Structures are given as structure tokens and as C-alpha cells.
Length: 289
Image (cartoon, rainbow, N blue to C red; front, side, top):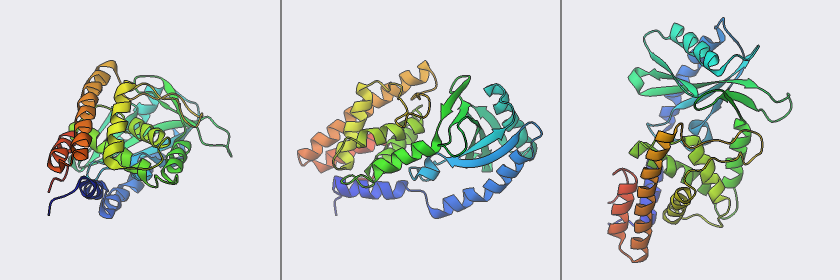
């Protein structure tokens, strides 16, 4: 039986959702990672906070890193020093594992890279009892402010709006799948926050139509830096450098064009052509039959 576009998106979104076994496997490393960081002689640890796609419910199956913010105590050094402290602590505990600095995090590649952790050093700047705000390493240098719980609250709030229930996270997951399957050098956090911002202005959710509109909107604004919608932290960028942004914009324009062709084909009752264009958008990973 031939798939409709609606059915294909339902199947695709189900395939994108990480399995419980994937979360369980990653959770087994959490204690050893935290123990390693707590044992550092260079810094103290106030607490750990899981951030990112896995905790937000927007991750991609088999392509979902675990993001862990370590809230440090003591005097704040340069961001380069904080990253080096984290790398040295982890490398001492996992000498046979790849551990490298990839701003703004320290990346740990377990099982030859099959399981990846990204550790983000942070220093809390907000008073206890208020929304947690941290100084974290900037994409290129220095420090920037971040409010991970406020950002999650924002995404959850939009996601629960009447009419689009679940739509914000579905759109974020689709955007991250586009990024992942086409190796687009763009921030997953940026894609998620922009997806929530886009869906906040919508009255309903249709995967094909709103994916197209979202990609065209990002193309129109040329991946502009985004103000923190909660007013708690720094503006954040889509890409880490001018070179990667140029590449990302090229990939984005191609995807937006193909998504529009898919919508046009579906509206003309040409389902096969619509599915073919969507398959191109998602790097030949989209279900077509």
C-alpha cells in the first residue's frame, strides 16, 4: 500500500526517536564520568545537569550525544583553562578513550565513537533560588551566559500550546535529522530554539507544511543570531565560524527549495514526487514505501 506524506512523516518520526535501550546504555557511563570530574584537583563540582537533545526529547536515534553541564566551584579561570581542566580529568580516568576539546565542550568518544558525551564546564552566575544562569565557554573564545532550565521551559511551553501539541519538538527533531543526515555544520541547540520560536506563532502543526515554512524562514533570516527568548542569557549563534555558516546556508537553501517542491507536489496530489523530494531533504533516509 502506497504511503501518504502524512503517514511517511509518522513513520519517520517514530524511527528518529531514540530507543529506551539507547538511553540505558548511555546512562551506564554517567556515574563514571561524574566520578572522574569530582576527583579533579583543579576544580570543585557543585552539581551536574543534563542538557541538550536527549534530556529535551528532541534527539535522533543513534545520533544523540549526551550533554552534561558540570557546575564548577571556585574562582573562574579563562574558558580555555576550564576546558583543559575537564579534558585532563577525563583523560586521566579514560586513558584509552578519545577525549578532545571541541568548543564549547569537551567530547568523550566511548566505544570508538559509537557513544559520545559532550561535557560543558560552567560557573553559576545567578543567585540561589533564581533561575540557574551559567557562564559557559563561547563557540570561539571567552565566556557566554546560558540558562538551560529556562530554555527547556520555553521549548516545553510552546510544545504544549493548544493546537500544536507536540509540534515544537517534532519540528525540532526533523530539523536535527536534516542536520544529521546531511552533515550540516549548525548548532542543534539553535535549531531547537528556532523551531520553538517558529511554532509559537502557529495555530496547528502539519509536518510537511511547517517543516517547509521553518526552513524557508531560516533561509530568509540567513541564520541570524537569536536573542534568548527568556531574557536570561546571551544571544546565540547558528554556527561556530563564518566558514561553517556559509556551508550551512548553502545546505539550508537547498533543503528549503526541496521542501517547497515537496509541498507543491503533495498539493497537486503527486505523492510519489513529494516523497522523493522529502527523501532528498533528509539525505535519503525518508520512508517512501
